[in-house]
Length: 320
Image (cartoon, rainbow, N blue to C red; front, top):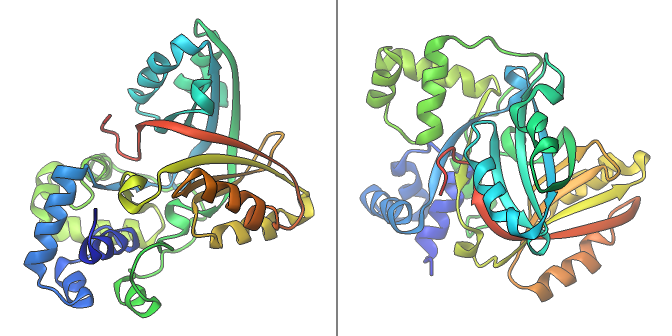
């Protein structure tokens, strides 16, 4: 079980993955050495990782939610194979083991079918169905929402920890070889020190510091925390595929973004036009959430709930 310091630290990292431990300690009322020790424990014993990530559209890529149905005995192997692909994240087995859900990044200036994952899946043996849903607008998650909604910190404490607001991405950013080396290093460890980042890029520490600040302020790079929801008391996870009247889509998405159960929400293409990833303490809590806040969403026409059985790959490129 996590104590108040560890829960506060996790929330602080979700606000700013590279926040100084001295600032976290000042906000929590403990020493920076205590914060560092707690982070090391969470990383080594609970697998918590801070991940540097790139918002796809900022570098000319598209984000897709992909649902793959296959014969039951092939599900685990397919999930592991998808987890090994560089273009996938959040690979999980869902719907009682009947399908695999993952996120895929595809290059914008080529047809989606030319993505390695999207092009091969329909021809994969024992796959019985594939549906790909492009993420059109994120309401919560990724670079759009640096503040977490869950944790012991007050609004004032969250404000103290918040990094400067990032600009809206207006078009693809050209990345250099050194930029890509920097991003690869941050994907493995979002809290890597400037000395190790300088080694990875061949830049000086001053140049690394300046370039990382530019990429963050430009909305290209953001930081995610790879953490098991069970650590925070959420033992029941599910994906919600919602169909909402088009005229109410923005209002419904904005409302979803305020729900403490929601870790990601976005408008998508497809038969359903709004997706949300949710975490609840129990099945009963999920039922109460579905019949309460979800049922009250404006313009809601239907909901499909797909329980998550097992996460095979999270935000990190490292397969756990």
